[in-house]
Amino acid sequence: MNLHQLHAVLTVFELGSVTAAAARLRLTQSAVSRIIGAVEAEIGLTLFERYRRRLIPTQHVIRFVEQAAQIVSSMHELEASARALKQGRIDRVRIISVPPFLQTILPRVVARRLSANPQLSVKMDVARRVDTPDWINRRDFDIAIVGLPVDRPEVSVEPLPPVEAVAVLPRGHTLARQRSIRLRDIVSGPLVTHSTGPLFRSELDRMLARQGSAPAPVVEASTGWVVCAIVRAGAGLAVMDPFTALAATNSGLVVRRLSEKIVLNYGVLTLRGRPVLREAAIMVKEIHREVGKSIEAVRLMRREVR
Image (cartoon, rainbow, N blue to C red; front, top):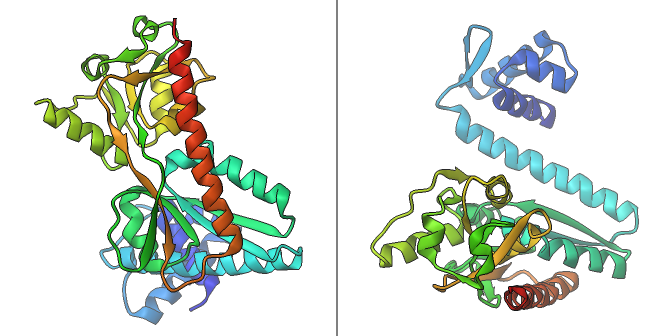
């Protein structure tokens, strides 16, 4: 079995069709079918069932695809590292982060470090908080930014300054005149929020439970930027982490303080027993500074309300 075959299996699994997979891989349909057949014959398992020109994954395929994806990803990382070395970029940092920090915090940090260090290259991946155990098990990162708590012996945890969730509403909304907005007004807004999983959704649910209620959102979305887009369109109001909220303030949204404090705790993980790269250590310090700037930006926005 080789990488070419694994890539074909992954493509068929993703697209569910030999025709679509062949088009993406620039192969004939018969060539893709032969590859799948060869892999199935080698491992002695049926990965796909044929049904009306579609390929339906069997119970065996999920675990196989997980392992294959890791192998292909590792090979791509090896190739990327080799290209970076060839270009003279001898410092390479792999960053994994929950989405809020990919809005403004990490782009600013990475841009500054690339400007300061011509020998640097960076790999950035987004992953959900619930995927944290999988990241740690694979150990394929230098720093990871996650929601806390994380209790794993394999990693060292450096907490970031705690931040508070904020209210996000359309510009011109009547509540936008207030410096502070009650959570119950947001919830009855109607409420637009993340699907369950992200840190701030968990903290929102916890706060509402303490108040004897539960969220009843009209829309649940998988990402913060989608939540902000729906709020901007006028479908409702939202509670959001400050990083995502600040990134959306120039697109027809306003950010306001919540009367009730919903504290969000994030941290930076590094692997125990693996030396922290100099560039990674510098980036962690820069991330701390950027979080502080975001906290100050939210504070200044409250003063601007008339």
